[in-house]
Image (spheres, chains in turn brown, green):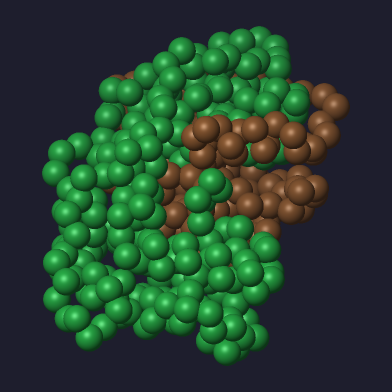
Length: 151
Length: 227
C-alpha cells in the first residue's frame, strides 16, 4: 500500500473537530474578487520565525512578492521534493498572478497566510484566536476569496 | 485547513479547500471542497506544470458559483505517487577512512550548493546547516551502532529536525543531479531511503532509538510511515 494511502486510511479513522453548521460567505463576481492563498504548509520567509514542531497555532503573513519560501510543516509524511522543484504546487502564487493578468480574478491579495498543519487536535486556538486574527488581516486587505492548500 | 475554512467564512471570506483527505473534509461541514486525489504534499497536483495547476484552480474557483453549501466535488484527474527511486547516481567512495554515509554526503556537497544557488533558498536549517551534515551523520552512526541516545545527544532528542535536514540536503542535491522533469511524488524519498548510505544510517538509527524506547513521537516522525 502506498504511503499516501496509509495516511489517508489513518486520517479516516481519526475524530475530527465538530462543526454543526456550514457558514457561507457570498463573494463578489470572480472578475472583481481579491483572492488570497491560505496554506497549512507552514511556509515562511527565511527572516521569519520557524514553526515549532509541537502543535504550532501561529501564522505567518506572506507578501505577494515573496518567493522561495521555506516549507515549515514538520511532517515527514508527504512529498517535499515537489515544492522544491516548483513552489506553485503548494503555493500557486504565480498562477494567481496569471489569472489576475488575464482578468479572470479581480486582484491578487497583497498578503497571503501560512499556518502549519500540525495542530493540536481540538484546533480551538485556530478557531478562536489565531484563525480569526488572520482572517481580520485578510479582510483589512480587502480579500474576498481564499484558496486553501494543505500538504 | 477545514477548520480554517469555517473561520474565514465566518469572517466574510468565501473559501475553497483543495482537500487531500476526503474522509476528513466530508465530516466537517466545510462550505466548498474540491477533493484532489493527488500525492500528499502536492495540492496543485504537478510541479512545473502550469496547465495542470490552472485546471485545478479553475475547478476550485468554479465552486464559488454555488449559491449554498456544503459543496464537495471530486477533481476528475487522479495523480498517483511513484514508488520507484529517482535515477540519480551517487558519488563514488572517496575517503575510505570515514563512514560511507559521511563520505557520500561530502561527495554531494557541490550539487547541493548548486541547487541552493539556483533556487535561492534551502530547506536545510531546521536543526543544522549543510556544514553540520557530516557531524549529524556521525552521531546517527553512533546511535545505529548501539550507543544510547542520551550519551550521544544529552537530554534533548532533536532527531526529527536532524533527519529532516539530512534528507532535505540529499533531496536538493538529487534534484540538481537528476535529468529531466521533476520526479514523481515519493521518488526522491525512495531514492534517499533505499539507495543512499545516509538513508540507511537514518533507518538504522531510528530502529535503535525505537529499541531504546526513545519517545515514540520522535521516532515516528523521523521517517515517513511505512519505512
